[in-house]
Length: 201
View 1 (cartoon, rainbow, N blue to C red):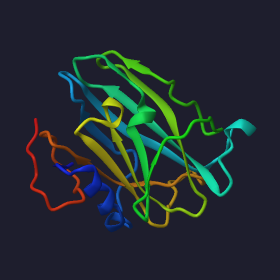
View 2 (cartoon, rainbow, N blue to C red; view 1 turned 60 degrees about the horizontal axis):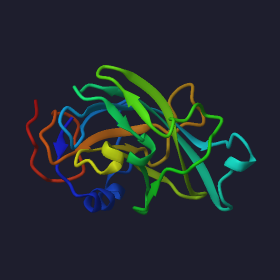
View 3 (cartoon, helix red, strand yellow; view 1 turned 30 degrees about the horizontal axis):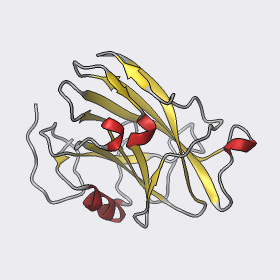
């Protein structure tokens, strides 16, 4: 996995160029927080699109649909992880529009609580829900620690056709995972920029 430094605006503008990239699902991206000892392995395990609201109060506004993304988080650092994963996750469509998480539960599975606390080496999983325009095509998913303010940003891109993995007819498949960071990182899959690689531990 290649780690690149890219401002948020460049990451968003680069998304349409990533459409159609092929690659495996279940990609894990190691991320760093802004504080000492803050490290997190983030894996996108499932994307349910469209997701069904759990109740009438969870239904999206007219003209929108729900998308539920399941993350697996492992604290690989030396500091406790205490954060809201919902604040650090964003969906991006093929037009470059960026969507924050939306309140409400779906039938896809259990949502993360408002605050997740993980001791070093602890792991947890949960869903983050988004409300996006009904006709929007998912292009990418981004995640950062520190409620989205960390410099280290993980990005997963989706197939243009939203092909589903075996056994998940209602799930779009993450097509490629990249890391974008101002810090040094691991080497591997290509990113969305021509910036030089940053060697990592």
